[in-house]
Image (cartoon, rainbow, N blue to C red; front, side, top):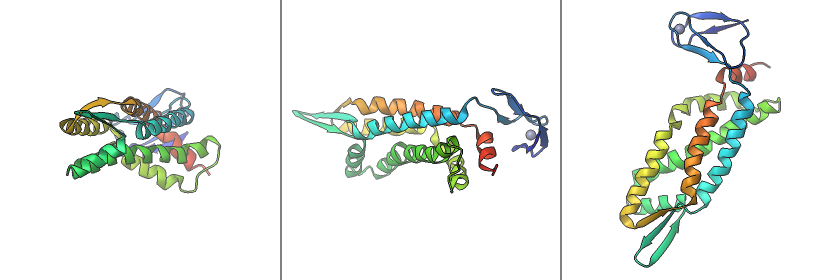
Length: 198
Ligand SMILES: [Zn+2]
């Protein structure tokens, strides 16, 4: 048995031990108190590691091939952003850099930092503030933001030259899916319980 307060209406509940795959709802307002997800730590870790591999491919392989007359130029994600920057698209370049390069990397590194030690039954020193920071940034991890950033960047670059998507575009698309899976595998309730148990 454990005490848990509803994060919507603050009603305190006494919750018995629950089975995997079930979720507890508030009796007053009906919002979900928490869900018990199967093998949450393993699954989150597996998706995160897959995500880091895809990220490596997405930033290092050609993102676009630009054709302008007889000139063919391959552009990786970062040099494409540099192009945008040089075209005077400073806001867009910064936005794409944040949403497509920095935030996904930061999210995956945080997940690795918090979840890998938990898997090994140890606790990273700054796990609690780090995971709190992650929860804070969670609304920023929406698939739409990434896709929009990439789409706008492609449209802008298409004005400069004919573009052919490269291997990195596919890797990036997969990364978006894998990151969504990683984040949806997180059992927040379990993580706070594990982080606070010793
Ligand atoms: Zn409630």
